[in-house]
Length: 328
Image 1 (spheres, rainbow, N blue to C red):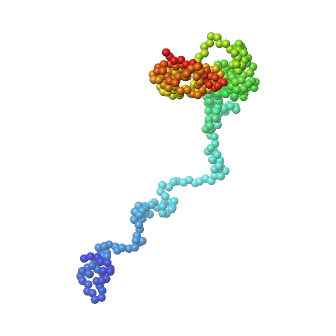
Image 2 (image 1 turned 30 degrees about the vertical axis):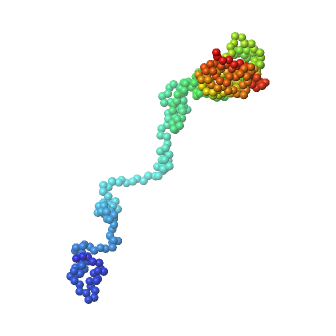
């Protein structure tokens, strides 16, 4: 048979019904039997929680405690000490708490004294000084360079000193700036020096402007030409300020000789030398080149050297080409 809920069980016992054996069995099986099912269920609030039960299992019980824990009596203590009789003492016989605190931080030993001087700790050379170390202590330090800054000791014991710092402690200096020593000094606008002082007794004081405008004769002198060297370039621009000659050694493309740059002077000469790289190359010229008595070449001749000689005509602002030569 099976357990049934109350609604089902009630249908077995309605007015006029005759319950069967099976229905009585269902009724019995649907009830709680203490001998078989144990204590019937009760409201959960009547029980402790599982956590509380675990704490109860490990809790110390009153019977586990010493007697004094529950009585609070001194006589219930074990291993009692033997107490003497306290003697009464006047409070003035003791220091105050504030005085005790001061005593805890007071200097415990006094350094040895020698008159008004502090005794050194075995230092006998007389060449050290006492320095505060920045951590509340002091130590004896050696003087760099030795000595004690008296008349017989060198200045090397002091830190490096600049000329300006040294000038600040000298009272009879003259001039200003840096100290000067014998090897390769740099002196700014000195006064009172004559040319004989520096080995220039034979030099006059003619200004450069005067010298440059004066007539001079060069004897046993050679003028080294200023040469612009070009291997190959589509455009070559001579520079009147820097070039006396321009040489093109292996022209590999059509060549344009651009108008010379710079500031040329009247009748300034210039020579241009041209050679191709084994293939004839066309030559064109800037508008400031002007042929005088010749025809300007318009192409190179294979592997031949060409010279063009010219002079600057400042009146017409032209470079007059007055010479053309071709290698035979």
